[in-house]
Length: 353
Image (cartoon, rainbow, N blue to C red):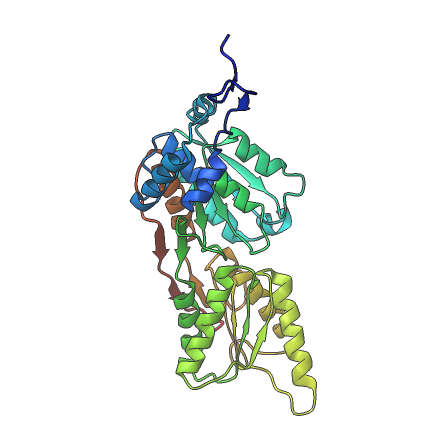
């Protein structure tokens, strides 16, 4: 039986064989993710020419030999895709945005050979969700509603091809992203109320741990700056209706103080927050839009449920879902889809502004 050890030229004490390089060491040497090395080793074409060259060079320098058993496992497709949503279930089922995007994803997956696994968790402390993905439960993943604090997402990105719905807060050169033009959308909303003669304009932001919310705040500020205005107020929110109501109560309290006044317009980063603000202000006797104009964001079913109906920014939620699934399926098939797809937004004018 061949020995697993070797001797030096003098026949002295046997020396251990050099440790075999690992796929993680190749990834570090090439400056890419583990999943990129895995795709190169398994012959996938879903790798940029630069990454391919870097991995091949690292493999040669480190004398890396792939584990044949691991390669065999890696080649076994599950024909399943994970939709990972790092949110709590209350938020997921309470916001029409998610329903519209998931419908788009489901429609596209339904026209393929894949099945969709929905994984909802605001955190993954036990690692069960991450383990399911990393241990071969799915061939790829779509990540929707990503926060800066969602560090467990990095382990998913290392393991399988991933498409992000919305720009991640920390963007990699290799990321595939389907997003809407949030800066332009917020500019449209703000320019609309400026064009209507409003000058004391407040905003209710989304969570600034999300790149999309940061982009909407940027668009709001840019539109004001272009008009020679400054924000009346920037109130924090988390896209939920309760956040809009709380922001409106804060504005009412400030207006009740000596010398205080209300804004004459509010640009909210979601329809839910816009509805919360609208209902709270109306309950306090404030006329919408005569006293305060309100604009939402999404053009979800919420926008037509208010009195008056919401002026809002329409983002193509169903189309975004379809695009995310299409790009991932293309990747898994060895295709070369565009890394960044940005969808346009549209102003929808109704009674609230």
